[in-house]
Image 1: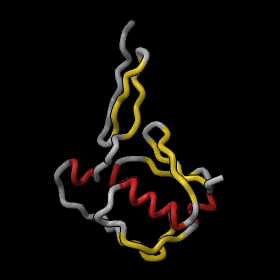
Image 2: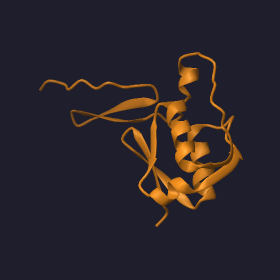
Image 3: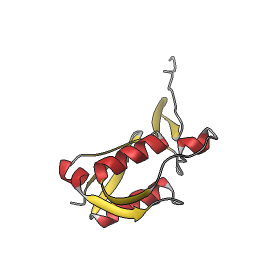
Image 4: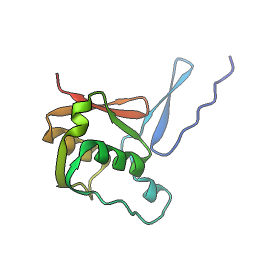
Amino acid sequence: KTAVPVLLTPNQKGLFKAHNIRTTLVEKPIPLAEAYNVKNIIDYNFKEENLKTIFKTLTDAYGIEIKSDNEEILAYTFTGDLSKKGLYEQLDLLCGSISSKYQIKGTSIVVSNKN
């Protein structure tokens, strides 16, 4: 059986199981600026910013698609400094502020209501 090639980008890993490779995210994603050793120009200090914009900022920073399955969630706003925190800690704070949760689905992160 011929192996199917898998392209991994930064912050992704492949898990080999039952002759298949499944792609997912690493345990501790790092910003792309750090991965490529370039100056970080992203500001993680948010003031009344809607989550749609914050998710886009984090998506750009980590190269990981962060989205929601609920349009209402994207309209919520957040104020706080998320710098000096890892991606999952940043998401814990964001989700905690709006009583939601996130799940890793393949190589994306989906934020949804808790129910």
